[in-house]
Image 1 (cartoon, rainbow, N blue to C red):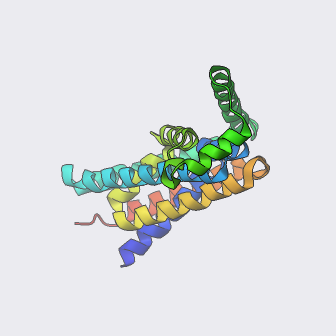
Image 2: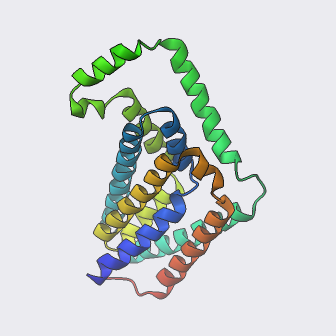
Length: 229
């Protein structure tokens, strides 16, 4: 039980500090300003849950393919590497609004391309279609799929995904998945509900600094802890 709690707390803290101010966080905030929040939240959160489970499965399988001692050492190195990476991001030059503006420009270009390809029908027709559309099919609308795909591919190969893999290889995978999902739900809900006003007030430097310190603490703990048999 203690291993589950440890995996849960580590995953929750790591996820929150990694995802706040991330590109997918900003993307969720921007999408929620232009589309129904329910669809954006379900799409983004669905992608993050799938990514968290996949990452945990990879981390859980890794010690069965290579020695647990080697995966433990790799995880330790990853934690220290991500810690230094986050601290570098915190102290490197660049405005805190640059990443938000970059994501917004990409989404604006996408919106304009879609607007040029198709024309919207009347509001009355749209409402009639929504009423006739089955409840579940609304969650597989173009908006849902767009939010899902942007978030999923935005997280692929991201620091938080690799950290989840390393964490699941060294801690209880169930605790890692549970903590990761709750952390993702908190961050995504905050982005969707808060929108641009919340995203623009977040200090990326403080978040990156806190995340860097946390990763280094995880690295020290992993380095000092014995390899589990």
